[in-house]
Amino acid sequence: MADEIYARTATRGLGGVRQRPAEQLPPLVPDGWVDFDDEVTTYPAAG
Image (cartoon, rainbow, N blue to C red; front, side, top):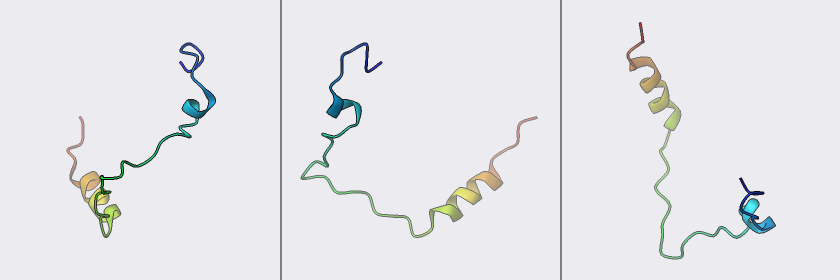
């Protein structure tokens, strides 16, 4: 895709990506793996 639109090197590597000055990152989950494991365990199995 990058070749087809003749994207610049900086665009291809996302070298120009910067965080917006007014934006704050979402708070980190203390232990996201516990939530993930709970989701996997409780997801209805197909079949």
